[in-house]
Amino acid sequence: MTNTQEPQNTNTSGALAVAKAAAGLKLYDTASHAVSSFTPIKPGQVGIYVCGATVQSSPHIGHIRAAVAFDVVRRWFERLGYKVTFVRNVTDIDDKILDKAAAAGQQWWERAYIYEREFTEAYSKLGVEPPTYEPRATGHMIDMIDLIKKIIDNGHAYVVRDADGNPTGNVYFDVASWPHYGELTHQKQTAVSDAVSDAASEVTDAMGPSVDNAGNDKYNPVDPADMSPDKHDPRDFALWKAPKDSDPLDARWNTPFGTGRPGWHIECSAMSHRYLKDMFDIHGGGLDLRFPHHENEMAQTRAAGYDSAARWMHSAWVTAKGEKMSKSLGNGLSVPAVLAEHSAWVVRYALGSVQYRSMLEWSDQTLAEAQSAYDRVANFIERAGAAVGEQPSREEIMAISADALPADFVAAMNDDINVSGASAAIFTAIRSGNTLLSKLADRADSDVAKAEVREALVNVRAMLDTLGLDPLAEPWVSDGAAGGAAGAGADSAEHDALDKLVSEQLAERAEARKAKDFARADAIRDALGAAGIAIEDGPQGSTWSLK
Image (cartoon, rainbow, N blue to C red; front, side, top):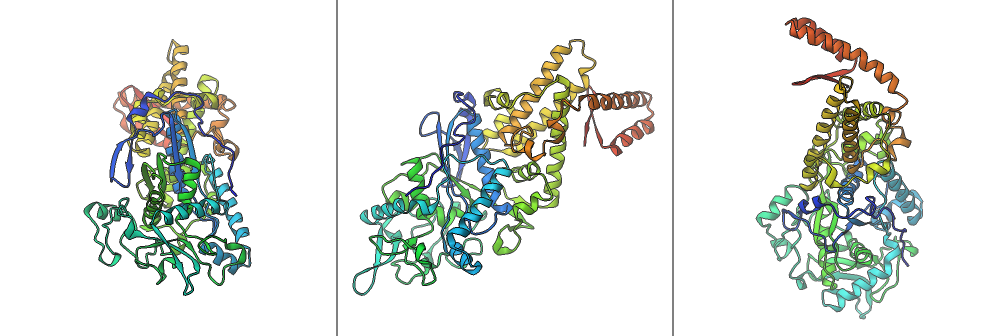
């Protein structure tokens, strides 16, 4: 039995050919610790598998950061003209789900579905595109069982048997039999007790859990099944595990190696192969999945006879006062609680405000800066739309190729998805657009000037859309976050009146500065500032915008 969705949004860039800009894309690879040029396995197509949520409880900001980070990666591929197949799994059975459901008096599958819907709602509210496929672990038991059989047949896993020779339900991957184990996280192939990190591993470990830590890692606790004395080697990990006495009868599956349920890692190997076949371009997930989950996943996939992902990408954590945001540390912020105080656009901007490999410190200041960014964006889009008499359609914005975007934006996105540089390019374009707007009334060639303003408006919105932040796109319009930008045409008369008043004040300030009456000039600037109007002085004069 499988659980799939019909393909959705496989290429929001429509039928565009791959952009010339695609040749310049470089991405980091966790396995090599290096940024290198990206070349797709299949020309014109990109396959991405991202580890999704374990739906044990409500999503918090730390969970959603990874979803937003890889949504931006996906959107850039789409803007480059690639056809993207994006798979994100749902882990709907594991120890935590079973234990928490029992404690709450719920069926385990009931709890999983309740929180799966909460995650889906959070993704939607924050503008994360639906995946092409979103498979559940429980829908792929046959795939997992078949994969485990292959690993056993290839001599890289063993079945634990009881005194009578009957299978117990426990199956472990034989790490000693797989000489490539440790290649992702640069571990040496030695026993855990004697493990020594190499220099490259030490660099990576500074960013996350220790690859050599087999103890009580607060960020990445060991699966209880992996503590079994039946293992041949301490490093071996569970592919299939016998049920606990407390496990419900409907949380057990019969297999040739005994009754039980899957280990943590096997589901992603089975589902990535099911939907993306032998090879795909990118395997993504949060930094805390690097070890043991992705190291184990890479080993078991290749040991089954399949190639693993070409490139591994990991998004860093959201931190609060330097600590990883997680429920276990008691500092999680639920998505509904944050959205009750801030617009979804602001929250998404805050989550995507730094490059995906950079830790993101979550604070009131982070959200205040995101709100300020929204105000600047919405003000420009509103003013520009009013000046040209329309807002470009969503279809026009989505059809803009990466080759048509400003060079500094493209360079930043091609530099391992450097969203900080991309955001800087957006605000550079907004400043230039505001300068064009301030001169529009003085231009004799007003049609040409309006065309320049419209081009700036299209560029700004297309760059924002690449980051999932065009204020006139869903879900921002229906959420009300687009505010004034969505009503730009209706507010044009108000804007014209405000522009006239402010321009008169700027002209008076210019005269005062010319006469060296700096006290008067400063007083005008301060009065405008107190009214919520920011003044930017440049070589061509002064421009204004709403703070």
